[in-house]
Image (cartoon, rainbow, N blue to C red):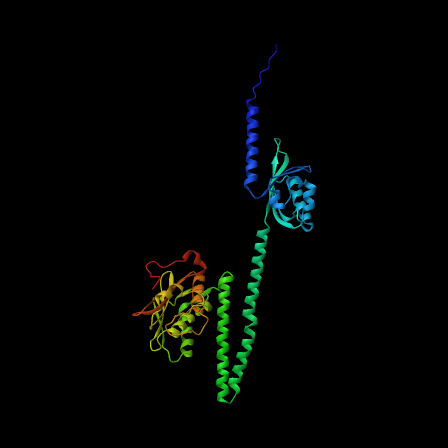
Length: 392
């Protein structure tokens, strides 16, 4: 009798490792929404995972090999996809990825993201490619919707900035010419009212344009350059003093220098004008409005103060929201759209600063703007100055 004893421990270990690997593959295929596949390079056969129905609508037995897969690729994408796959396989590449349209069982096309990794044999040669197909149709549609919305926003901004301004400019120029040339005082007064109405409508269009940019287009754009905040305030105070001859507006300075920094001078003038305009509208007509520029080591401080009835405390939390009147019920109904303080906040924050308000019966109302010296560095310098109160 002859006997043979063989040590099959290593074989059993290898088989156990294979079973474990197959179980991991099965669990991965079950856990993911992607369609897994395994293609033996050089052949036509492709082994498909279990997500064929959920991804493409096909039963597993309806899925074919490489030639069938090629036929289901959209004709406009097929050449590019096959060329990229041939390049990876032919050049000894490690991975492949392509985005294309693939025909579902119902005849519609899914946008898919297909990725594969080249597996090597014991001698280092490429033997197979294992990958996954992800349905990104909804993602593509979402991107397309976002692009359409962005195009709509740009068209809307273009209409506001150009198509609506042009007729207003024509009205304003005509009224100005009529006011200058007409000998009749009544005609001049009528032309002046028309001109003022056109200017007010132009300001409303500008406010709506800024609202649209702030809310829908990623923020209000800035043209940053070396700027003197004091010079900006002087210009605005002079203009508003001329426009409101019966009111007292006083500019004060604290600290050395003229408040130099890197800001957008036009937008800062808009901030000052909106805040002083808010004080003119809602403050006491008999009291002086103070505009203060204070220089600090890293910050420039702007304060606009007025006396009068305080802002109701329940309005402070939403005071800078759009379509809110800056003074609430302090002096009756506002004359604008309620966008002035919202635009102030957006412009100040675009510079990396902050705007706050405090309002009491005894001290009146003060808006405080804190601006970093260099708006280009707003990402590093943003935040409140230590020790300063932020709310009133």
